[in-house]
Amino acid sequence: MIYSLTGKINRLDDNTLIVDTGAVSFEVTCSSYTVFSLDGKQESQTILTYLHVREDAMCLFGFKDKLEKEMFNDLMLVSGVGPKMAITILSGLPLEKLVTAITTSDIKSLSSIKGLGKKTAERIVLELGNKLGNVGSLETLLTASESAPINLVTVLSKEIDEASDVLVQAGLQKSQAVEIAKRNFVQGMTSEELVVACFRNLK
Image (tube, rainbow, N blue to C red; front, side, top):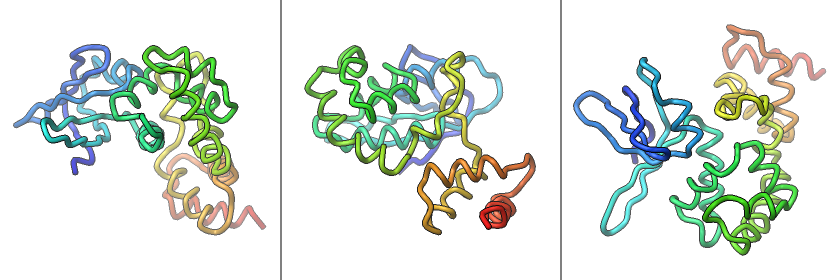
């Protein structure tokens, strides 16, 4: 499994990036939001990846960060949704609007995505609506401004993400854990320091 790629990134088209790692260049299919957020940056970038293996081909799919990859994996659980369809869906709506549409059963918004039919949209709501809503995964995490949709999947730092996971293991709901971690986070904190601060302020 190829977990991630790091290198210079160039846009091939609206849904494809070329990642030059030095010795090898990889063609990676991504959502349009990820493509345009990374295109043109001069410094080396890292993208998370998913390798899809078929009898006749191996295809790499890329994600700007963990949240987008988690949403991709959730969509792949839906009957009839393969990796290419999942990327199409991620390209059709900003991530926070996509999750809101799923958790509020907004079939109209989902069906507005080019290539996504009403029946598939209904299956997505049926199979993922409760999962996303109950866990609180993604919906309450995506709080970035609608004026900057390309950056919607960058709202959590590594420290906040790791600290919130510890809080969930302690019995909190994911949405509560993230909110507490964000409230207690101070720039420069390690994950361990943030966890201590969160538990101290829970008392």
